[in-house]
Image (cartoon, rainbow, N blue to C red; front, top):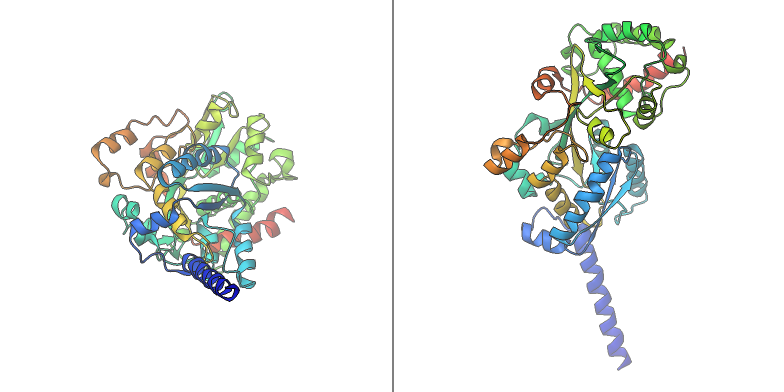
Length: 408
C-alpha cells in the first residue's frame, strides 16, 4: 500500500513538473487565442517599467490594473525600475541559466530594445498572435518595423507614440524661442532660468540629439544615416561648442545638471527655471491639474523640428507567465485602453492605433477628447515631426557629452 502511494505521489509530481514546464517553455504563439486567455485567467503578470511619471503610474494602477482583473481575472503588478536596470537583471538571470524569471512584461524601446534583442533577452516574435494588433493597427507601418533603426521582427508591440516638446511658463515668457539659435540667445539673456537633464537621462539625451540635428546641414543627415563618427565630426563639434557656450548661464552656472526629468520638473514647478521638456506633447496637463505645474504652462517646439518615436511592450525570454503577458499586452493595445491613455486625466499621450480601423463611435470618442491648453495643435506637431536616429547616437551623445562638456 505504501509502495502504491509513493508511486502515485511520484506520478503526481512528474505531471506537475511537466505542466509547469509546458506553461513556461511552451511556444504560446501557436495555440488559439481562447486557449491563451483561458490559461492566463487567475494568474499574476509582473510588469517592469520606468516609474518616473506619476500620471503614467496612475494610469496603470487606477485604470489598467482594475480592467485586467475585471476582464481577464489577471492580477497586474507594476514594478518600477529604470529600463537599463531591467535589462541588467535579465542578463544576470540569463547568465545564471534561470529559465523561470521574475519579469513577465517590460516597457521598452530604442537603445534598450536593441541591447535586449542582440543579447537574446526577449521571448521572440509574438505580435501576430495579438487580435487587437491585427484588428486595430497598421501592421505594416514603418513605425512598427524598426525601433531607433533596429528591426522589430514582431518582438515588441506598439503601445504609444510621443513627440518631444518644451514646456514654459507663459506668465514669465511671452514669446518662447522659435529655433535653437534663439534658445541660445534666450539662455544668455535669462541666466539661471534654463537647464537640461544629464545625458544619461532619456530626456536629457534627447535634448542633446535635438542640438545635433540643429547643427547638421539637414536633420536627415543624422536620422537618415547610420552613425559614422568621422562623417559627423564637424556637426558634433558644433554641438559641443553650443553646449559649452551656454553652460555658464544655465541654472547653478552648469555646475549641477538634473539627474532626471523628475528633478527638472521640480525645478520648474518651484519657479527656479522657467522651462522644462519631455517626450510627451500633453504630459503637462495632468501636472497642471494636480497643481504641480502652474496653470500658465504652455508648450512649444523649435526649428528644425521635434523628435518623436513609438514605444513598445515586450516579453522577456524567461517570463514565467507568457499567456498572461500576451493577454495583458493585447488588452493594453485595445481601443478602450488607448482612449483612456489618450485622455489627459492620467497620461494624455498620443496613440499608435489606426483610426480608420476603429468603429465610427470610437473614432468620435477620440476626436472629442479635449487634450488641454498646454497641448499644441496636431497640425503643428505633425509639421514639426522628426524621426529618431539609430540607437548608436544615444550612446555617442552620452559618452561625448561627459567628455566634451562636463569635464571641460
